[in-house]
Amino acid sequence: MIGLKIPKKQANTIRLILQEKSILGHEWKIKRVDDYVYLPLKKKPDAMLLSELNLSNSNLIETDFEKLKKRPQSIEDFLKDRIPPEKMDEFKKSFDIIGDVVILEIPEELEEEKYLIGEAALKFTKRKSVYRKKSEIKGVHRTRELEHLAGEDQPVTIHKEYESHIMLNVKEVYFSPRLATERRTITNQIKDGEIIIDMFTGVGPIAINISRTRKVKIYAIDINPQAISYLKKNIANNKLQGEVYPIRGDVRDVMNDLNIQANRIIMNLPETAYKFLPLAIKYLESGGIINYYQFSSDYSQPIKMIKSIAKPRKVEILDQRKVKSRSPGVWHMAIDARIS
Image 1 (tube, rainbow, N blue to C red):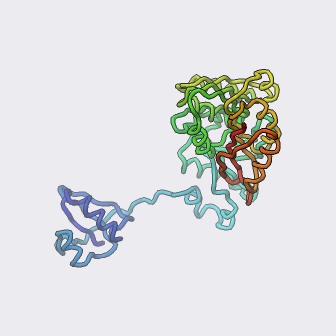
Image 2 (image 1 turned 30 degrees about the horizontal axis):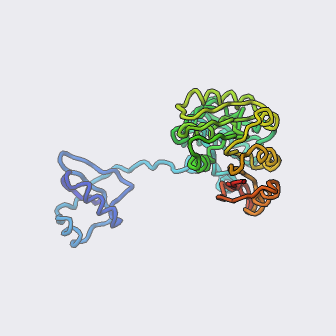
Image 3 (image 1 turned 30 degrees about the vertical axis):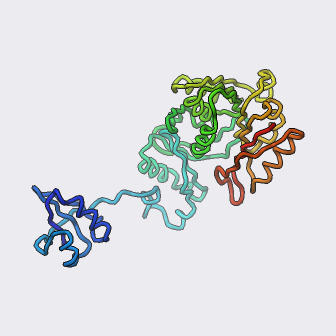
């Protein structure tokens, strides 16, 4: 095939120009021999371009180039020609990566191919363990059933989120890597000196993120003993500026026992957080902020909920966000409200 022979010193500049003009052949490997570089071309450049590059027809040669191995761009690429196209349409293309663990959604129609899909996910992500969701999040401990498909059956991992290191067991606690941006949004709101209650902390990703960069006091509460156990490990494994107090128990009992007035209360339990709004408002100081979450089709529903329960206190809506989609037309909504 046709190639362009040029001195090494000019190679990068000319390569970029040829790439911009869609002449460079990306399917072949660039060849280097002695002081020259051979660039594979999709077509012959015209005389004007050669002149602009200070080259001539003598730089054009016929030579062989090695075909580049195309790296698969998705799990589906690994499964091409191994699962019928009509079945692949049923495959959930989204998946979660938590540390060294991959968690897939595989429909029942692909039951016979689940291990094949698991191996493809292992190769594509280069992680250590692959699991399949076998149930929805359920129970007060917010856990789900997982089925091991490929790699090591090792559910304990350390997930890196920004500069935080979060240890957890994916079978025993709830954790969503998809909330990383939301956790960063909340962290950016925090000021030094705040007293914060994290009502449904889990393994403490928001508490760790905040206290790693802010001098605060956070009372991190969860009813799941395994979550609190890992939270304690995460406190020890991260360099924190603030103080985090892990507390295991029903949030109603814990907050009544604490009996403190907080500057901020975080309520990221979108399915049932509304049930705890009276409790949160009771222990929120005047002018304090609630970071409230609810599944809803629009902002008006959660805002109406906050204002109704907060009466006669004044509610100022500081921000409202769609965190992520839950189902068609229903969103995981975030409402930041100051209650005076």
